[in-house]
Image (cartoon, rainbow, N blue to C red):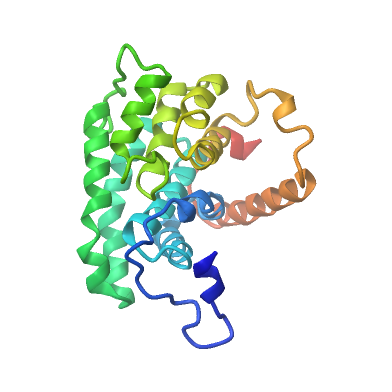
Length: 262
């Protein structure tokens, strides 16, 4: 809210906030997934990177913050296109150098951004090694005992200061962990992504977006969405995003997942 209050679109540069050493929170990631619905095609990757980063920098001008937005957007596009989830993490690592190049080319607080860049990438490498999917080919490995207590302990190790899911790197990471474990089970996704001792509303909304892009409402209790506030408005926006992305597909984009076709 503090960052939004300083934005001023009526003056030149009024949307270009300065680098924020404390801008590594999860808020940019939590709000970004719709960008992946708008630009899901592989041919739009450059635009997806730039829009997601600038969306994130509106409120979170720190790599840990806006790269969380990029991750949420990129994984949404992967879900729409039917990319196997075990490949998503490796795909992110391959996109990060392109994101860094864009930061350099943009010319805004380049030194500060590059000096704080490494944390996000390091944490994702550690996580992907832990799950055994750094190669993008292996199936993810989970502990035999991975109940609520074990998950809370593991999620805490991923975090910046112990509050799991509160930062731009670990919010999409925990959501991704839940998706990998859940497969097509909505209940398992909820247990792992929605209900834990950290910033669970953030991880929950990100995980549910990706899962929904793959599986639609399969297995989701109707009481979860039948009386959703602003349901008709949200559905209309979703239809408009779909039409925009479909127009791009008609003009030469890639394929689409089953939920996109629905």
